[in-house]
Amino acid sequence: MIRYSFITILLLLASFVIQQFLPAFTGMHQSRILLVQLVFLCSAVTVEQPTMLLLAFVGGFFWDAHCALGPHGGDPEVYSQQVESLRFGYSIFLFAAMGFLMQGIQPLFKQGKWHFSALLSGISIFLYLAAEYAIINFVRGDFVFSKATFMQMVFTSFLTMLFSPLVFWLLFRLASACDHSIYPEAGRKRQRAF
Image (cartoon, rainbow, N blue to C red; front, side, top):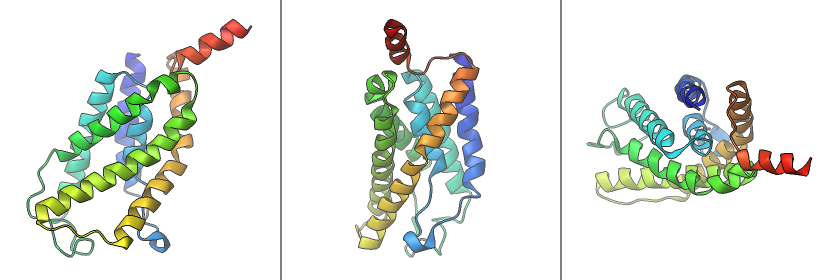
């Protein structure tokens, strides 16, 4: 269990590196694959709550650090009205909220029904983006929600969700290498059948 938890943390950190090389899809409203959030969501459903909270802290902390390294107030090419004082650490709470959402479906996941978790990862990404956009608009002082912004959120959520089976496959392999059972209830049902 400890080895698997440690490896999920390393996998989350590696996703930050890979995220730097993933391009935006210009034909799909500048949508992106949010690999960091996806790795966190897929890992959150496979671990216990304390490990999920640790992953949320690590992911949120480094996501804010990553975003804070750019120009003050955000990239002027992306934000026409730059954010003046978005507080460091807000992503930790957003990551934790997404993690608790994934933990809620963990009983289904432990029965071997990972497909529901893959679908919920897309919904969680959409809610994450909506919450982040709402926070940014709250700090700016006005709320503008265009169709292009909505489409960018939808396409980003959908594209990210399409890669969740690949991340789950990787997590299953890592769990097998660590002799850790991700979904023990499905294994018990198979043993009873034989």
